[in-house]
Length: 501
View (cartoon, rainbow, N blue to C red):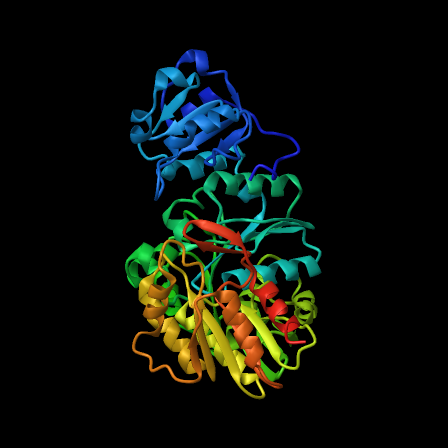
């Protein structure tokens, strides 16, 4: 992410880097000045060190020549990467370490003078709710006039500046550079999503979290983790004294209860109704647009206000954001005043209004649990039929496809099964997985083309119906056979509505 740079570069000598890694280099290379690290050969800046790491599809050493051409002054790689290199032809130093991925995070933290320790950093993990929680927290901090930043699925926010991202949690070299820039800009607090992939792949190593928040754990990413226990253990690593000072854990689910009972760092618990929790809703008065709430918190703190977000899961997300805001030092009275101003994250139950006489929504739900909960919420505010459109991504956890298909089938009056980033897989094969065991009738359709599926949903919608398109949310591309083309559920839904006129 070359566009995010410090105003004042930090420089180190290559010898200092080698000393930190505990390896020796030629004395002639000791004084070489470097200004950072990058694992992306295409965006590396002149003067940086290229970190050639082993990847899922290729080893980073395959891209060293590109990095050199862009101005890399040195390379850090493993034995495998070094063995594949014509070292005598490179003309830049190569630092070889046994397992660079496990060291780059700590090295990046050291290189940028441990920026996370100069700010309040909140790390949020869990299957669902990470994005919304960080987005709500960002808004509360803005309302309280805390200079703050956000790092997550929807992008990177620094004050009024926005930068798009490709990963929920950036690679460690990028992450620490971003934190360094935020610190240089006098950022007081940072809300950050910590994905299970990032935790396992050492992307957040070296980050010091003032608080770690846990939303929930439901089936997802089993293609990567293998089973739910491994998935849970990946999340659990965030809640250790090596990474976090304090924990705030939603205990309205068994994995949250388990986590709260197993960790040794100080913690607070959260619940919608359990008054034994540290943070809970003392009162909830709901209507079709939201809830009047009274929140009881640590030390008897009382926060009152209105939350204009639908769904019990959004109450959980908001409660976690409120608890973190209070822990970070925001006045409880200010938190209460901010609640009515909060809006959901892009692509999360996002309304599309184009003059139609039915409700149109776009949501990111892409797990069985999320699909079930979002459809239940949409049902509660629908006067007539609920028409749902959903697909499952290719080259990802196949075991959740039938569960997601069943959730759509059972949660909608009209269920339309379609594509969602089929990647290298045959879209029809994915759809067969989704509909396996279901008895499809007149109220269920399989339409491979996603835009066509959305157009059909809009065409059959009548006054009072709700059309909800699930799975992609804020995403702006569709990947088919390795090619990612521009695509937006929001734009397709608007186009479909416009075609009705």
